[in-house]
Image (cartoon, rainbow, N blue to C red; front, side, top):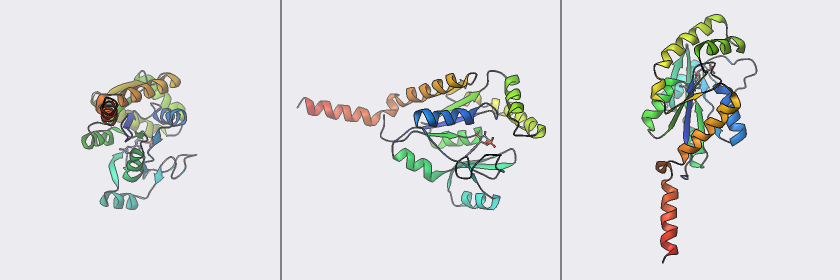
Length: 207
Ligand code: 5GP
C-alpha cells in the first residue's frame, strides 16, 4: 500500500515450474514481469524481447561495464542479468514487479534492497524435479545432469529465502504465491504512505 510497487524475487530449481507460475501470475493478477537479458541460445518458441533479451557476450559485458544491470550472474555457462530501467519505471508507476532469477542474483538483490520479498519455488521432492526436467524435453541429458547438480548446490541456500513455495498443483501454487505477495504488501513497513495519509486525514477530520 505504498505508492511505489513492491518487488518480489522468485527463484527455484530449474524445472520447478517457475516460468509457468510467473506467466499465470502476470495473466491473472497483472504483476509486471522483468524481462532478463541472457547470452544463452533461444529455445524453440522463445521470442527476443519477450522471454529474454538474447545478447552476445560482448554486448552483455559492455552492459555490465556501463552499470545497466541491477544484478547479473553466470548460470551453467551463460550470463543472465536484470536490466535496471524497466524495473525502476514499473515500481515508480506503482506496479508490483516480479523477477524470476536464480539464487546468486536473488541474494545480490536482497543485499541492495533488504525489503524485497524472496520466494523459493520447489517441486514436492527431488524425484519429481528430475521427472519434470526430463518431461520438458528442452535440454539434453548432459544439461539435465548439470542442472540437477546445480539444484543440489542451490538447496544449500533455500533457507536464505523468506518463504518456500511448493509447486505440486499449479493453480494452488499460483493462488498461494499471490497470497504471499499480498500479505507482504500489507506489512506495516510496506504501508508507510497509507499510514501517513490516514493520519493526515484524521487530523483534518477532527479539526
Ligand atoms: P533458463 O535458461 O532455464 O531460462 O534460466 C536459467 C536460470 O537463470 C533460471 O534459474 C532463471 O531463474 C535464471 N535467470 C533468468 N533471468 C535471470 C536474471 O536476470 N538474473 C539472474 N541472476 N538469473 C536469471
